[in-house]
Amino acid sequence: MKQSRFHLTPLTRRRLTQFRANRRGWWSLWLFLLLFGLSLSAEFIANDRPLLIYHHGAFYVPVFKDYAETDFGGVFPSTADYRDPYLAKLIDENGWMLWPPIRFSYDTVNYNLPVPAPAPPSAENWLGTDDQGRDVLARLIYGLRISVLFGLLLTLTSSIVGVAAGAVQGYFGGRVDLLFQRFLEIWGGLPQLFILIIVSSVVVPGFWTLLLILMLFGWTSLVGVVRAEFLRARNFDYVRAARALGMSDGRIMFKHVLPNAMVATLTFMPFILSGSIVALTALDFLGLGLPPGSASLGDLLRQGKDNLQAPWLGVSGFVVLALLLSLLVFVGEAVRDAFDPRKTAV
Image (cartoon, rainbow, N blue to C red; front, side, top):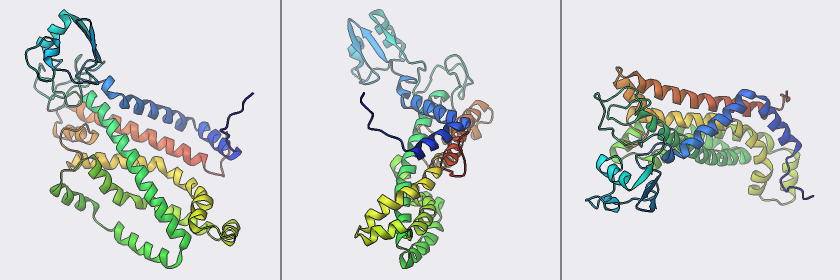
């Protein structure tokens, strides 16, 4: 019988058992992955284009490709508007359309509202519309995807820079550590919000612009933890032995010392991710985040503040954001317990 090449160490198995023993964190992880997975397929859940069209014996996939109105017997050669009653009638006469559950994208305006926007929840707009007539549920799905992807990228990039900086600072110590500490004190005292305001007045804020700016200030969150681990481990016997055998400093740092430092680093990851999502939401709420019209949880909360007569706006944004952050906190607590050597599996 062929054995698998992937083997878990006893320590890793014990940590996984401890993580599963925390039922709240275990189920929170699966619920978070489910919500994130659904948001990744947002175009198949909420879209103003059909998933599949059968017309005159041919199949069309508008969710992947643009088609002209003339392809379906229309008059204009422009991109087809499948919500147009005239085009919908042409297609239905010679075929059919398979629509997603929600027939709105995050930027689709519903021009057939029976009341002025923001419209309350209805059979067409399950969570109502915002003050521009856009479907709230569609914007929540797309906004959740952008928030989580932004948070993951910001967490990954800032963690890589922070771990590398903390490793150099802690391993070499002495003057390097002293100069780095003074630099961190100056860098941490810079007014991040004012810098964002200045940047937004010069360039139009975008996904990558915000990611770069927040990464420049967010990488310091892990420096202290990694620095402390490297300061503690750099004088251990195995490190001295490796140095005496002629092993380079870089190999000692990242092969022998870093795995020990990553234990403390991994326990902070879910909390850093939740902080990154909150940062993007706060900037969007203040109008300093993603460009206008983007799917954003912060923009939805801002609309809820500006339209108190439409409570479904603020309540929807608050519930999704609170649920997302709660799940990440519960997962973080479970990861912290799993890497805690004082705890035993239940």
